[in-house]
Every structure is written in C-alpha cells, then in structure tokens.
Image (cartoon, rainbow, N blue to C red; front, top):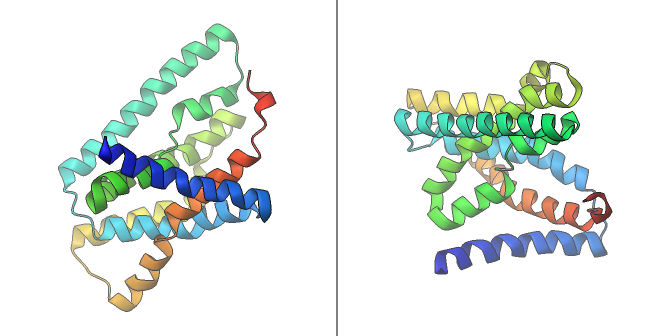
Length: 205
C-alpha cells in the first residue's frame, strides 16, 4: 500500500498544481503541450533510450505488448462502434493509451530509473501509432507525413542507435538534453491539471 501511496499522491499533487495555475494565472495549455511534445519529451526519450539498460528481448517484449493491447482495444472499439453507431472519433481514446503523463510519472516513482526506461517504450510506440493512424481514424487521411515530422520519432531512433552501438556522447552534449528531458513529466502533469480545469462535464453523457 505504501508504494501506491508514494506513487499516486505526488503525481496528483502536480496535477493539482496545474489545476490551481488555471484558476489564478490562466496559462496557455497549448504552449505547455507544445513544449512537452516538441522539446521535453523527445529529449527525455533520447536520454533514456541512449543510456538504456534494456536488452533486445525486453525491448521487443514491451513493443509487442503495447502493440497487442492497441490491436485488441481497436478490435473491441470497432465492434462497439458498429453496434451503437458511434462516430470515428470514439476510437481515438480507445486505441491510443495515455501512457505519457501518468504512465511515465507512476513508473518512475514506483520503480525508479529502470521503470522509467521501460515505460518510455510503450510511450514512444503509442505516440507514434497515434501519429501514424490517429489522423486516418479521425479524418480518413494518411498520417504518415505527420509522424515523420514528430521529433519523438527521430529522438527514439537516435537513442536506440546510440544504445546499440555503445557510443556515449560527451557530457557537454548530453547535459542540456537531460536537463530538457527532466521537465517532460512535470510539464505533462501540469498540462493535465490545466485541461481538467477547463473540462466541460456537460459533454459527458
């Protein structure tokens, strides 16, 4: 019970700070989201994967596991959508997991650096899948070009390449990347709090 308490309370405390920020400061949630998506998250993924202790077997298992979960939920979502006649947008939250803010934060607090490294794999796979297929699900258009523009993809590729080759960049290169990556989880949690403040409960039926 202690590990649950020490994991959940810190995470929701940061979310609560984001909620309070929305009440007093009226920050721009889109700016925080862009910082997390385009700068902090890629830096975090690159630093984690480049120095990862995950072997090929565990990396493959995590990748296959998250892919399996998304495929199963996609099948269930399609069946549910067909039965109840729901729109295409229903599938987006069903198929693609929110494995960023909550997943990364809880994994780090519960299991330390090793847990954060492991959680980064489902996070990257889910984010890239959402970029590749999310546009197609929502609009019926190919999202391949959108995914290729995401720095998260290239940071993951670069991090894996360094891990495989064993090349260690100098500290003068890695230090700023790690500093930027360190703000990824707080940024995502703060942004979640901001979004909760502006959630319209009347839309929930």
